Image (cartoon, rainbow, N blue to C red; front, side, top):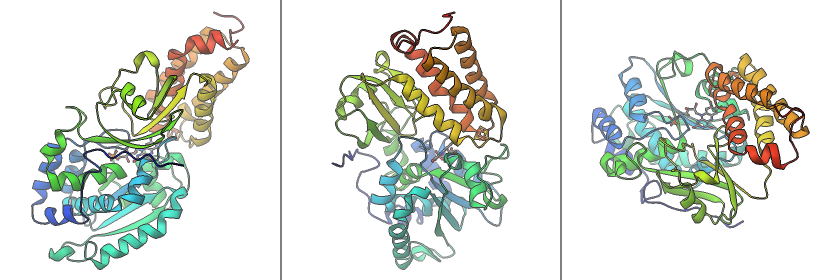
Length: 401
Ligand SMILES: Cc1cc2nc3c(=O)[nH]c(=O)nc-3n(C[C@H](O)[C@H](O)[C@H](O)COP(=O)(O)O)c2cc1C
Ligand code: SF4
């Protein structure tokens, strides 16, 4: 298949391996944190937490060991941009980890690599070995006395919930991958009980550019609340699926044009746990303050059945719920049963409304982000496509109340 990677002006701008590391070793930790704050970089893993805040807390923590973890689990349906970064731009990801290590005072970094990406393990290990030979990893990195840092890659085992940072840490510690209660947060009590920064691949890949070119340069791209650019993994009904770097603030309609999408009925922004946007809202912008996404964009044209799409998403959540807490374990099952009842035409509108209420309860009562976000598709698809689902597919309902 033709490769459609579009390079923008931030993340895919020119960068030479080691450039950010060299620069960072000539300035103080406070200066690094200052540049990060200036950049207003927010986490690219979905939640959008300010990166400078996370790093500042761990940098200030008193501990004999601290960790930086690169979250490369990339389990959200429709997301594949971290794969491209790791395969084609490892210098950005690994330099970002070294810079993080220097700033927060960690000597060890761990990449938690999606199990299905095992095929890239060898080339990544070879890359790290070359970094060691070039003294970009190891002891006294490029002559900086006392600065020691190395990176280890660990493979995940295929559970979606293990992308959630506390479940990821449990998995790394050799336990069952289940979310922890928060607080305490990983920045205070993370891997092996030590202060830990967990960052997405793309977040870390943004850091070397910020250090090399300055926080102010980065901040000038995108919008005021969503600075820099974003990698979008675009799939579905379009002529040119692929990974696209676009500035934050790009309209959905603009993106559809760029990727050659026609007769688009719906765009699922943020993966199965995101929101389904109908045609009437295609002028909305991709930004933290509007249609937020960790990167997944799925395009559906007029030929698609929205109820089938919703069923597919709900089956995924029933399968992936870790079962620890009742709202998510039972709630997702009830929502899937509801979709199946609608499919058979055996429902009342009263019951559908109760299920939407159940979804809202799950959003606040579930223990981790999986159950807090899994009802998003259920609610947005039933609300935005009610004409199609309830009146055009012959799903009229038994009572119609
Ligand atoms: C169910 C679930 C799956 C997640 N999967 C990922 C993932 O694959 N990659 C990722 O970076 N963040 C994922 N996250 C978000 C992480 O918990 C965490 O917020 C993120 O790694 C922090 O990095 P950032 O601040 O750089 O975004 C997931 C969250 C949830 C609730
Ligand atoms: S919300 Fe779901 S995935 Fe998260 S702890 Fe509860 S049951 Fe497990």
